[in-house]
Length: 369
Ligand code: ATP
Image (tube, rainbow, N blue to C red; front, side, top):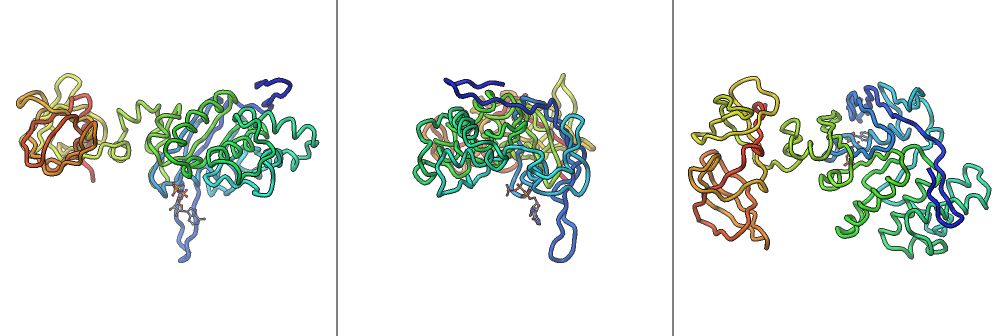
């Protein structure tokens, strides 16, 4: 592709159609000599042009997966393919992927331009050509005019842009980012999300982005890979992961903070009816059913005030109110336990109210073991 600006352009040469992770595993040996599996048979196909987020709690294996793809860590099982070429046997420099880390890892004594051109110099590109390409990369991240500054003279967001320019200047087929925004403040993080998406769109290559932040993954990715303890739980578009989490683990991680035990009563059209300690609820059947004991997942944000007796309505005794301006986060006691709810409007501790969650947002999973 060509990203033209005056007489500068960044031309991406290496191309591919698909990156394929085939049962990728990675184990570590601990001090007692035991094998700990950080990645357990990761299968994933990534197409050119896709923005993939690896999402999960700390320690789930996201960074290990990224490092295995980059070649910074050897696999202990499986293989990685770029189209028909096996690449897990290649050293990182032969893979030529661009990497952006949380700590920008810029050279403090080098100018912005030299930081960006460094990788090209190391690859034997002439100074004139390296300067031209570094300027094109700086143009793409909208940092033209800052070439001569030292990293310390830039803001955190600008430094992260330099790190991105440095990653893309080598014309990588794939850009790998490991929590690149976690050192930035909230406002800048949100701006940089859009910026990284824009750069990704211009490059027309694939980006793999590691984060533990659901909002970041939801707002940036074409597909989200949710991981837990080295195992992929769900691979799907953001909307799917948000509204139809595949299992209770993903549901909890995506904000279904209330998980209630119930008994399956039967089906009603596309819905299932459950009994939660005497309260009848209609919900969407998800997965994992192997008995009549089920778990119902409800998001605090999906709760709304209801007329008593309305579909899916239940009585709630307000115990704690955390006032939040536009809405309040409350803890209520119900027939089936304590719940978190985020509701609009006023309400006070001690009040008895009626709440409901629409059946389409009441997710019914098999019993949590
Ligand atoms: P975080 O968001 O905290 O960075 P993560 O999801 O990226 O977490 P990894 O860093 O990939 O998780 O770690 C996965 C598991 O592998 C963890 O249990 C971790 O302790 C272990 N691990 C990672 N690197 C090593 C290492 N060099 N030696 C031993 N164990 C390791």
